[in-house]
Each structure stands twice: as C-alpha cells, then as structure tokens.
Image (cartoon, rainbow, N blue to C red):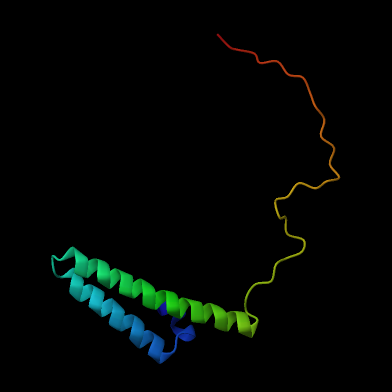
Length: 92
C-alpha cells in the first residue's frame, strides 16, 4: 500500500486499514469462518479501491496506449506455408 500512497485518498487508506485490522483481529482467533470473512472483506474493499484507481488513471489518460508496432501474436496472411516431407530417425 505504501507504493500506492499517492494514488489513494485518506478515506481509501482508512477503509483499507480498517479491513486489514479486522482481518488481523480475526487471525488471532481459531475460528476459520471469521478469518475467511475478514479476507473476503479485505478483498472486497481492495477491489473497490483498485477499480476506482484504475478508472481515475484511465480518465486522466495515464493508461498505457497500445503500440501499433507491437506484435499481436497473430500470423500474417502474406506468409506462404510450404509442406515438407520428413523422416523420424530413432537412435538406439
């Protein structure tokens, strides 16, 4: 969270820290259901905050633009495919 400090509002940090504190408290008990609920709560809060950060960066134009020169992994249609005969050689 320290590396995202400049992108999170004080309210976002408070919500995340509250969820983290609840998880830490649940982790001290032996009740697995409480721990799972704490993890789910933290994940839910984080997903909400991450989505809003992504949307903010997208709106601000910080999102990386696709490079038109970048290889997309598709085979170009102008390549000719030649068939070739081959022989499997087994070594003893």
